Amino acid sequence: MPDYNTLQRRRNTIVGGFVIIAVVAFIAMVYKFQELPTIMGRLRSFQIMVNFPNAPGAQENTPVQYCGYQVGRVIDVSPPFLYEDQQGRIYHHIKVTIAIEKQYVDIPSNVDILLMRRGLGSSYIEFQLDPDRPLEPLDPTDPKTMYLMDGMVLAGSMGMSSEFFPKEVQNKIESLVDSIDTLAKNINDIIGNADNKANIKHTLANVNALTGQATKTLESIQGFTDTGKNAIENTADRLDATLAELQMVLAKINTGDGTAAKLLNDGRLYENLLDTTEELKITSQQLKIITTDIKEGKRELIKLF
Image (cartoon, rainbow, N blue to C red; front, side, top):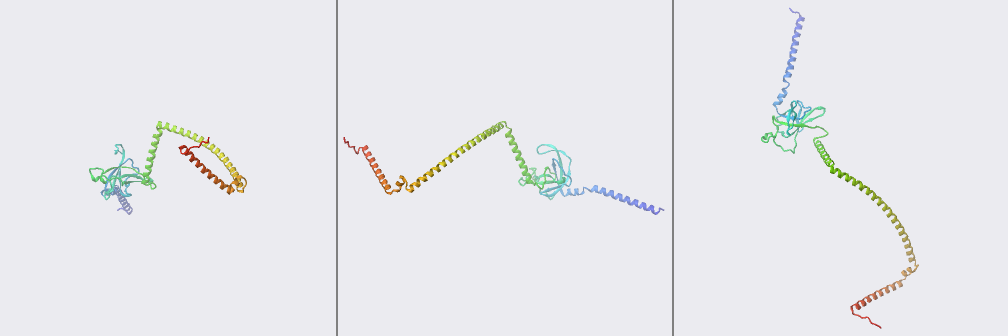
């Protein structure tokens, strides 16, 4: 009959075996059913495939957003394969399979699919819709392709996510860069032309010559200004002297000294001068009338001898 210690060891061995079997079974079940959530998710969603030129950070369970709201997730990322794009170019792409919940069947098929990079290397996929873009089916013969459908294959591209540079600012920056590039090309076309180079050199030479002439003209104007200034100063001095003399004459006239003062201050002499002037005027008019009559034959000269 086995003793107590032997029975105890046997019992511990059996318990240890069951623990090992349970752990192995648990690991097997975890490995077996690890895709159960994915399988259940596929039953509640439809799948589309998106080809990206490159897909950094894209992996299973990467969130997929539309209008900033999560509508699905990535369920598979395939290795690079050769793909022909819409321009006929053939190069390697990454196929990303996306599961979208069936309640979001009204997402337009002409959305821009962008793989956005966050900080610390994380990524997400964003469906962006342009409101100005008309809603048209991908297949003109199938109106249902106006919206995303199960099995649809679309093309994606890389985007840029930044809290400091929203989409509107990014578009303006891109437009500014395009404008600068166009301006640089136009400048190169203008300057690169041999005739334009010669014209520019000729224009610069003319500008240089005009600058020299302008300098000489300014010097001449300066000299003329100095001469005119001196002449004006001399004239002003002469006017001052003349005014002083005139003031002296007026003072003498006012005091009654001199012939001019007597003429101006004698009232009777002034009246006599006016009468004499009026008589001379009448006599002149009569002489004009007599001369006219003689010319017209109305009067004759009397010959004394």
